[in-house]
Image (tube, rainbow, N blue to C red; front, side, top):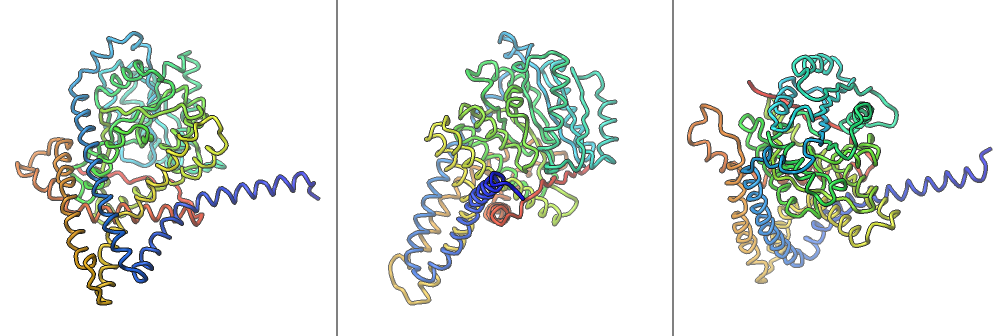
Length: 506
């Protein structure tokens, strides 16, 4: 018979589980409550809702204007940064050649040419290759692919880097979610053993975690080293480059190009507001911080953003993200068929939106940490909750409330001025918002790589005109997958890690 102490302990754990589940439920509950209330109140008091949607659209117009300002600031910083010869500039900083870069490249079932392109980009780096420790983290569950590919990489790039380490992550490890986080956590611990053998000081190592399709700018390591050595708190910050999805931009359909560029532009605006910035996808961080938090969590989907929170909590809020204005180029979603591309794009967006799992983690851990300033806790929690809420609701609410309450009011015979003028006000706000859309369209052509032969001189026009699809992508690849992700977390139908299919056309 269990003792009274064990019964109390078990009851306490049950209460903890319930409390955490409430936090998991909250974001999805707010989303669905908003959808339900918007429809119910549209029939109950349509005039109220018409007033609300006018103010709501006005708010989003104003927000779009200042986001555009941030985007233009970020774009200017990008253009200035790529004009600098960082391989020369870094040599002006004392100790630059004592910095090592641990590069983590996870591999599951991607094609060899995708992996090979990433490795070739390393060799074109204008930072000494002897200072690169490259780790190819292979998934054992895809051994039929990763085994031969790893052997080819070892043969093709033997002796090129200071170290080339191949690690095979075992399958079906108890307590893990099979995915990028568990893979690189396993590989990182093995790399640490080799680093200890080489006696390299941890504070001289910067870790760069890449998706397998990531192609680094030739000055990335030089620029990162320069930024690292000149940062006043360099061991307590991660480094986030710009994410450009340019590798196969000319092979992908218009829908996924819009989604890719929209993601790029949103992340660029966040770099201008580093107090809101989280790590995303490919990024860099101090090895000391990674060791202090015992590497990436191996039981979550969104390890790229969670690693920032792990460090933020470990250092009682004394951890930031420093923007880097050099790009890392990755793939847009593209498969052999348009339907396959749409499905893959949806699943990728849903996986990114599953970053909502960070909300309960933040609230739970912030409440237990009295050293983090209260104002900082509130700001991060609010930014996270408001961000995932708006992602899921804003486009759908703008669409539904732009016609439903007006139609209801007209059907009931209302002759109020607000009912008659609402369609024109909303139309004017949408037309004014087109200024931001046109700016985004032009910027997308400025960051795109040169078109392949055969595209002709008129390639510019379809790249601009494709942005008329933006409202569709905001709902199809924005609101719906975000709502899907939050609903799954709310219902406890936890999402596993899904690997985006990589396809290159020859």
